[in-house]
Amino acid sequence: MSSYSVERAPAGGSGVGANSHFSRSNYVPPHLRNRPSPTEQPAASISYAGAALGNDRQGYGGQPGGGIRNGVPWSDVNGGGRGGGGWNNRNNGWDRGREREVNPFQEDVNTEPELGTEENTGINFDAYEDIPVETSGDNVPPPVNTFADIDLGDALNLNIRRCKYVKPTPVQRHAIPIAISGRDLMACAQTGSGKTAAFCFPIISGIMKSNISAQRETRMPRMAFPLALILSPTRELSIQIHEEAKKFAYQTGVRVVVAYGGAPINLQLRELERGVDILVATPGRLVDLLERARVSLQMIKYLALDEADRMLDMGFEPQIRRIVQQMDMPPPGLRQTMLFSATFPKEIQRLAADFLSTYIFLAVGRVGSSTDLIVQRVEYVLETDKRSHLMDLLHAQRANGVQGKQALTLVFVETKKGADSLEHWLCMNGFPATTIHGDRTQQEREYALRSFKSGTTPILVATDVAARGLDIPHVAHVVNFDLPNDIDDYVHRIGRTGRAGKSGLATAFFNENNSSLARSLSDLMQEANQEVPAWLSHFAVRSSSGGRNRRGGGSGGRFGGRDFRRDSSFNRGGTDFYGGPHINNGYGGPSGGYGGGYGSNVTSAWD
DNA sequence: AAAAAAG
Image (cartoon, rainbow, N blue to C red; front, side):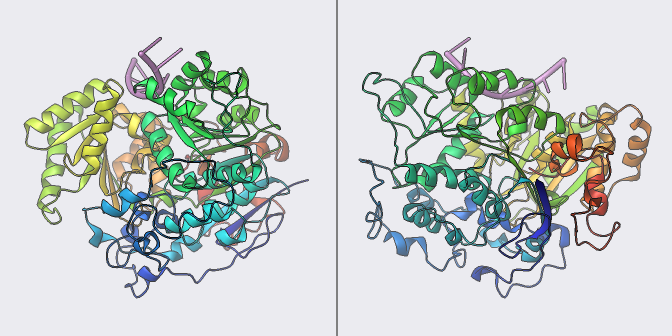
């Protein structure tokens, strides 16, 4: 009944099921040909190809002098002007009168990243080859190798080309056919690997094909009836998803609206009144809208939770249950539900199963994949020395600065107060910094993010509000000024750098207060082939008796990529997941390749 | 214990 597979991606077209498939793709995008092989700097130059092809903002607009991936420069397609020739004749009847739809691609053409385009080297497609993919569930649809292998519709295909996505990333190759076939999905994948597209494409395509559109109930003219709901844990992430989705939905007739707190609700209400097919929202504001009876979920056909493990953790779970289970949303089976995350603790998977109907579990990536291009350092720093130590790092960084521009540095701290005070101190000491955290107004938060992205304030001091999902190009350095208590949070935080083929550096300040993290941090770094200081190993041994992270219990959740159903009902004895009869991991025996990684007690290096 | 998410 249930089958699953482990393979290397991209694999040959067929086969998911009891077999494994390995094949290599020879594809190298034009701009990456004739590059020196990146052997000299393995850690810094290995890239996850998805980062270059997926949702990353670098994907838009390309890079001057070679960033155009499909050989069709955007300006040629667009004619350089709004809605240029060839754009408006592809509606296939799906356009439902989008009077004045803003061209979401336009700004990307004009706002070319001013920072460091020269460092866009070293995308290594061999790394891409090595990404294992694991699926489990009944009748898993086979992956595709090209977007053209699936009929997503002309308008969406055109937008995919405009986004310069040439080839689906591993998560897209697998998730899109699954989603297109109508199946529920629990997926683990890095952000920046095309995750947003992986759930947006099927939703947009499905809505286009269904021919139902943003309904305007005549009896309830002020109530919006979205067909799809995408929830995310932070406002900025919702904004980002909305921006992405708008690009994908451009001139498809599918209308995307975003709703989040801290912003004037009236504007959002007005947008909703104009009709909404896909609603992107944070939970709090959505509940508000539901209570005001301005949104009804009764027409929902698609539900997507981004950062799903975060959405179902203690703080969020009641709100999510309320939205999904206690309002008027159709139950599992009558809607299609897709959960995306990186880290997917077993206990959270269990909760998540409530929202799903005979779902497929998908994990894409390989151990340490997100950290392969991130150099991780841990330094022993007493609380009292943290500021001066940070100052040393920043001075060194400034000395090595590229073209006089300071590389972007994202500094994570534990508390909102701590963020403010560190920001103030940095500014006082000549380092232009800003901060983002939940005590700031939404306006301030968005301004801080913009100011950071643009390099105006190349240092951003952040709480965990910025830890997940945010795609900030050109972050060269993530500093864990205060380490988080949970290794998952660490993984998400460092994942803000090393994106889109860029090398990244992550520095953590460690001291006695972080003892409980020593074990999992040490294990994680080891698996990512990072240098683990001896003293950290000692900490790990010392605290290993008591200090389990919440993943707990021996078998662990490495890879975030283990279907909990296999533990409970398929794997009674707790035997090695990868030792089962159907599995050929192809990595040459137990000690080779990923053997150690999957079984370990560390959480995933996924993002 | 903290952060996030409604105002």
